[in-house]
Image (cartoon, rainbow, N blue to C red):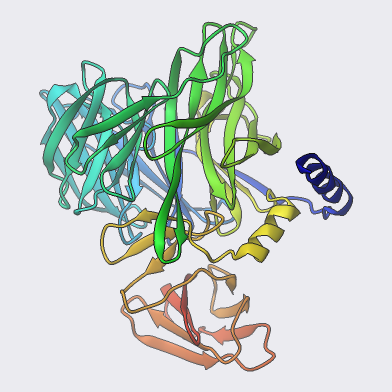
Length: 511
């Protein structure tokens, strides 16, 4: 029966899939004459943001904050220098959008008469709010950071003894405590757990659970399928996320996805694994193993994944180590890892490191152009197959499956296809994901509201102070509503649709 269903599904896909040409936008951002690195893209209120630095260069003491819109256009580029440092060890993913999505927190380590932590907080456009320099014991370097449940941030990395290290920063960027966890490896990423504490993804394809004070609870290493030349003995660029399914008013933990790059004596690949909340590995898979002994040293590496309904979409790049190459993806069934679809992302610019997210129904890659020569972004609006779109519509796209933050009253959730963060501004408000579209954005004054809108609902536009500048009722039968904001000043505005049982909010820029 499963075989017949799979054949039917493939027949329907081939015979009825719409012939839609994907719009792919690739953009590079010049950060100066030195080599630069930029990893881990995240959505913000204007579009997207990346943070990076010079890479393996002298005097790399600056952090760069790059913003870009849905068409890849650069919105801002800010540089922040850590005064007094001779070098900053800025690793991948060492920044996070703060609790209210209007701020960016980045942390790095460097030498300034001894090892120091450099913490930076900016607004949503990369402008510095404050920075802090703190003593950092044990030669700690950072790989990832997340919002702390009790305020501030928690960063993970490694000590100079190459054990996992965790550092807690308070809301002002000062170090509260450091913990050295006696597990060998480098911590690349950290996320908050639904039941308290944090999960850490680290080298050795390992996932570690700690409590909210940094104490070890358990640790599990994933045994990967072997390469053609034997076992994969080294891994890096680990990322992870937690799968939480709401059921009957409660949160049901399903598992944790761990992804990364893996290496054997003569091969490399990108891996994906699923681990349950007790630390038991349910499945693991290595994608696109490359023979690194060949000319040009081809590799498959820099792997991460996103959730799409019952699927996990894993991405990676192949090609020579330095000059970069093409990007690929595989869509896998979450529960057993079976590959439902795979293919190329069809990039035309060679990519060195690249991380994939999905936001506002677009696939976004942030990373580095081949040769570490520039920051890079990729935008694709047609990667989802028709059968996945149909699944989302039939099963309820608005159903949240995971909470990315449970820190304060401001909750950030990830909806059913891992897109469009949902903001609950106050416990009494009800803010849901919607297909409501506000365009063009940015706008010169005439703004249209369309997509999925509710007849009879009230459209309200407010400025950044909360002042109401326009209200308009959606009349029965209207498919699109025009808002005249030509008399308003330039800046950021909020467009709300106040319906019978929900409030939907989107930002728009007047220029």
